[in-house]
Amino acid sequence: MIYLTGFHAIEERIKSGRPCGPLLVAKPGPRARDLMSLVGERKIRIDRVGTIELDRLAPDHRGIALEMDESGSEADITLEEFLENLGKEGESGRSDALVAVLDEITDPHNYGAILRSCDQFGIDLVITRHRRTAKHAEVISKTSAGASEWVPQAETANLVRALDDLKEAGFWIYGADMEGEDAWRRDLRGRTAIVFGGEGSGLTRLLREKCDAMISIPSFGRIDSLNVSVAAGVLFYEVMRQRQKK
Image: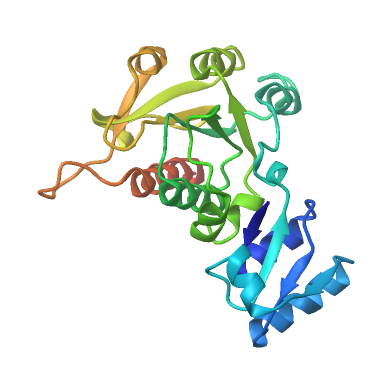
């Protein structure tokens, strides 16, 4: 079982309507009591437990924890479903979808921070490599401030094939790389996918070869590069900035 203990994480999980519960309660404070009211409204069971038991199940709890099945961390949607719902470009389909592709992001804090930016900037889908991405649901949910419950995510065993599918659907593929062209020089409107490499290792060779171009963030500091989660937020902002221009 997985236990969520962060107040934001618990609240957003409940609001999302996805399966969860019961809510385990030991010594609730004011914030926890507010969550108990929300749980009651959503008809989710509340179990009173002792502090020692809650310490054993969820050591970092603050008097409350939400139980979830392991399936709660699985992908929300498949890439095929996403593309089908998107429709064909140029007909009745959307022409401005934005996808983030994460290549071996293994730090759950980075993954959660990226999801938080994805929620803020309206990213339509996050695609990750099956079994090679951070899977610590509690850390991810906390770091993302609950955004992991809202951002559509898809897993795939083959990211190279996923990029081919995106290209076939009319997406331009850009790799985030510090040696790339300044992002603001590229037209990032239309169907766009940005690929982010793993911490330290960057983009793998096969994915790099699939990209239409490499984009970067102009830097004037002494450190080699930005953290991947910070870089993702900056690049998402640039995409939104370009799309808001008249």
